[in-house]
Image (cartoon, rainbow, N blue to C red):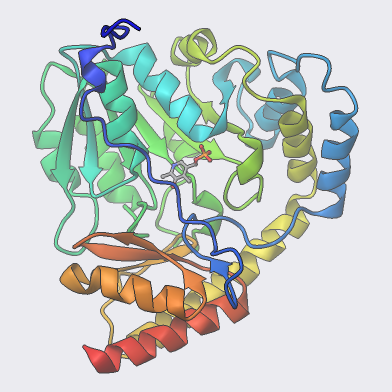
Length: 359
Ligand SMILES: *Cc1c(COP(=O)(O)O)cnc(C)c1O
């Protein structure tokens, strides 16, 4: 065999590989997965039925334009169908957004720490990441971000609420920021956790995008809607951004199962959002219990909590696993814990109480 191997792009060197949330341990005593911000509820009956029905024709390619889903979304949000672009999860759409705007020599900006996919998809494109540290309170530092814009900045992610900290930026601050961003630079409001927000001062990105051609909103069916495994997300953006997303999307990327299940989820929204309400109730309980135990936890508007534990992070993650819950550690920094079913949250809270006494 030849010693030579195919030449790969230098941009891929040293790429941080995406670390998926650890699965719940197989064969362990109990195993709740609180590591990937998934919805703990199984699919709603109607949603499952439409996916199963669609499975009957998976010898056929799906509708490439996602016509049914796009029409439903456009109606639901009161936007033109031309402004809706779908993709293989909102990460797929985010990757298309970068491919549409940035390449070598360009800059993609985002807060750090934020969503782990941003550095990876930026590096793949050959563009340069500009990471702007969160404030000491773990919130986006929008003034510092605006100050860091250069003539090479092509795209800025604002993750609201931020993954993994759960913190939000509010209307006045976000509007002031958007007013400072040049019109030829795209701002992507990543609202993967939009449905969990209960703070009325957090703006709906779809309201902000309407009179701002350089704002795009990312949403997903993976979190509140409980379709993480089906890979479907979407952007709402003006032309020509939405058109560029349709050009760069993986052809036939969104399966018919995913399209039909997403439509069924939108139609079952009342029931789904009821479940989201229960999770928000659990979030409050988890947050307040942790604070009562003496932990400092940033206020969260998402379906997870963030604990900045520094050097104790790995030890606490191991203690949680021992207690039967898998969480998401960021070594040396902190730990993100998804709000799950009440039993899982209880196990986590007991582990936190015990660990607090050990510190
Ligand atoms: C989970 C998540 C997504 C959604 O990813 P999908 O590809 O839609 O499953 C997007 N952005 C953030 C910040 C997330 O945490």
